[in-house]
Length: 333
Ligand SMILES: [Zn+2]
Image (cartoon, rainbow, N blue to C red; front, top):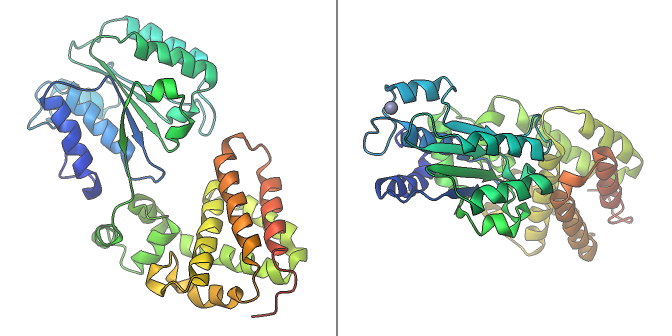
């Protein structure tokens, strides 16, 4: 498995394989990290290797009955706890059903693996019910909790799990991998738009995401000169279906990061978006940097509160209005 695994996950895989080899598989693992780096594929590969009847040097054999069931998505000892709909919460009923299931023995007497994704979607009651699973361990059952926001999990759960953290790979490795996947044209630009995640960058490459990113950047610059267009821009951004608001806020934060870096005379190679340097530079001189820092903080706070933000368009309007007023006396560039 590790050969076909993303190259930046090899160290994580070796750690997991060592757990299995030494027969000290943690009862619960948290795979944490902001970026999409293939954590789900890794969790599945590890689960398959634990369920396989004849693992070979730590990897699932791919041929046995257990592997066939895994490949068909039908293994009775591989369970998933997920929201019923994307971006919804996981309620207590789903956890209760899981607990009932766990009271039965694993069907194949090897190991049972439960993957919870995303673990931060457990609502409070569900998290408390799940905590009981960790407090009263079931024999030969392991949990893998996938989350981009480990800090949202209750400390009582976190403290009972072994945490594995995932960081975006070095750009050189990511770019080399993207080229191998056939992304020949400006992979570094797509990687920047994908916040350093090669997995996301590969997805973006075929979707015209660079054009969308540039369009939004233009809009973002434009509202400073034409504040009256703010509501229209917020509506357009909200309507487009290619990226969700979390990505939009991340992009806004990344433009501001570059702007702040440029205000400290950063070199082009240290920017997230070197191709935007000239246009960001033109913004610099008349900007009120105290307001820029405050705006940057507001965006980051908004990102953290997205899960509980009901009206996304209102949030976009609020942020864009604040941005458009950041420097009322700005001269044209
Ligand atoms: Zn097998």
